[in-house]
Length: 186
Image 1 (cartoon, helix red, strand yellow):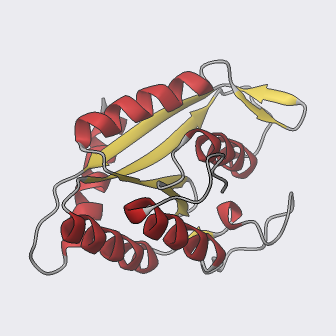
Image 2 (spheres, one colour):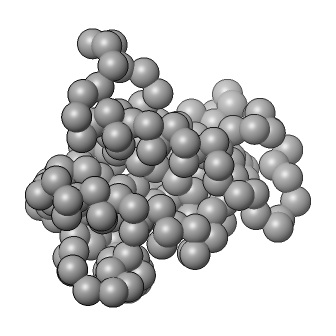
């Protein structure tokens, strides 16, 4: 991550440090290692539900402590039927594109095998929907995977209902998963 205007300040600085620490400590999945790209690339590693809930809990705590909204967006992608690309490579290409177009304070991790989780700081659900519309517009012409452009259709699940009770990160994650399932059925 880089910030062309120098080091981030205040809330951005904490989120920036958290993002860098997070991307470097995502535990690898038990699946076989990826065959393309760098082995140490954090966007190729899959985090578990428990790890994402733990990461989310820290971010929710920061949001409550500093009084700003926070949104969780889960994104899944479908490719065209005639695409010869593996879903692994497509997901990685989309993750890179999203990572370039999100703010430095936002966190993007790979969740499960075919899902991206985006934690958007200082963003309510309306802002999260606007951000995903903007991100989807970058995918309208297709994601570049090797020498091929693959057209992908994103589906999103949103959650920004932060509670002050126990297990709030798990509730936030469950709401986003339910929203994603609902969008897939439509």
